[in-house]
Image: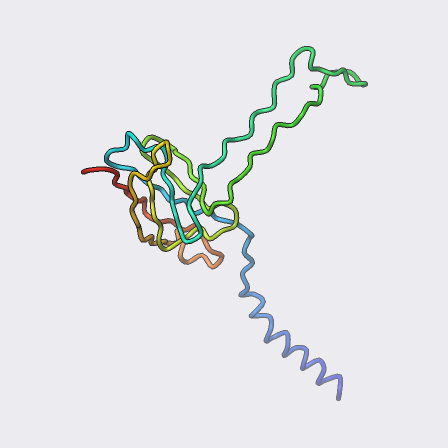
Amino acid sequence: MNTGWGILGMAALVAVTLPAAGCSTACPAIGYVSTIQVAVQGDTEAVHEVQLCTDEGCSEPEPPAAPARPMATPDGWVALPGGGFSPKPGPDPPAPTYPDAPFLSFKPSAGKWAFHPARARNGTPDRVTLRALASDGTVLAEQEHDLKWTKEDPFNPCGSPVTTPPLAFQVGHR
């Protein structure tokens, strides 16, 4: 008798847990970068940099890429034991250092700026302040914006990238 209840109990356990196991969603570990686009309008001649500021602080320009390794010259080659040549080992170029800022900025084209979160910070703030800076660091204009984020695929149970409409930043007189 005891074995009959054991088998029946095991069958009931499988019947209860099997549907729950079939409904689980395994999501890949994907990090989405939420970029904020800004179009600077008006008197843009004196604008050297645009900053995006949140409660965490203000953005910094993205560091330049690391310099490319120099090409090997004829005297910069080493003969390999089995034949052939290899470039002489040399010092690696220094890796770029990243500022401790909530966002990094870059300028994709004239009058356009883009901002993306630096490291693993919250890249979807509700409110930002834009600042136009002259080459000497003077603030030429400042404007606050509320951001509305929308998921690109709201029905994806694993999440998806979020976007916000581009911001128009008026500098100077209209």
